Length: 503
Image (cartoon, rainbow, N blue to C red; front, top):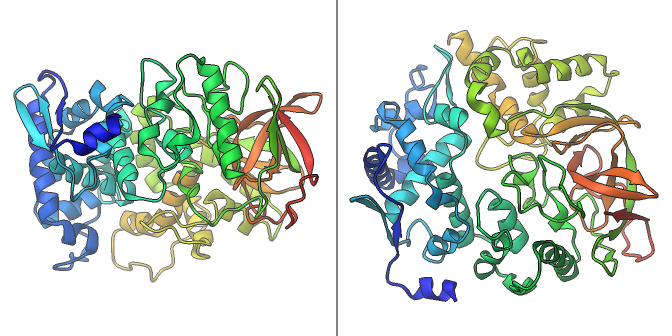
């Protein structure tokens, strides 16, 4: 009913609480920057207007915005981050209040905090610009190795729920990804007093909201098990099992979403690739899965790849650990190899047999260039040299940006590969299998885990043996050379493959 109520409303009035922590300063910036972004939309996002200078004076996205006329670096970004961390932005029930009247060019509504207010379109345009800068903009000024705002606030304080809310609302109003498992994954950081509402609050926003009926007589454990079972039955797919996990689910079973943790499915890792048709580890095979009568075990058919032999990582980008990341990234701008994680990768790379190097660098970036707005598959061959330069094992070509400062040349040359690597490996673990294959697995992957392709899953999955041919689900994985159905047959024989019992 709430979806209908908000759809029929002429406008929405959102109360964010009393004024505090320089909220008036933050709201003034949201107003002015939102209006400015709307006015300069074509120049910012479509490259319209005068070309920017190529003399090295515009080195970062922040500098580009300032060249266009807005003094971005002079703003009070800590105040903005405190405002975007207000509890209002983290409530799962708020999503529908904004989403049903969403869309950057048609949204209406007013946000009120204390005696100040701003309009919904101002907030939308503000968030679009900030996210654009954070996702696609160069953040380090090569001449001084300083990390500019708003990247610096992001690194120190983490991704604020206000920006997450904007991303989720935009996704709900504009695309084909409006299915429940995708939105559940995207909204994992949001909170609800009753954990069942982290699922129920989304039903009015998605195309498959009838997949489960709200029933508060059911326990939390029953609800999440029924959701997984209904999703697999509806789609003949194991997409609902995908994701990263920062902790082992404290209770059984391991194959349900951990709605009690704000960090389930967190970080980037394989998440950007979930909606991409590039990866189809099980080919055209449909899921062959069933549950036992107690809904405690999920039986799935698939094929075993091999056991993890070595694991390097994870590459920690968890927000709680980002307060010291600024200095690390400044150092990494000169040499990625000075980071302990990358030291281990470099040591491993040096041990590879001739001819194995290509599989290595393609694995590190999931065989894609993730540095731009549109992902490019397969990753360009120049990534190999960019990796070697970043690892301190080769030189930048002499004709690349000749005559510009060395730091600028370095950042511009290695940038596409290193940005792709950070997206692919964020909160993820690099691993090798006993047969020599390489992959990128979940946060908790470790030697001894089994990597499999389960029918109906677009990624490989990492399972932890617990005895008697039973396993706990650890998370999803990319295995180079196994992401296009190479290891499975082309038929949908219900009796084909090995049965894996997930508990």
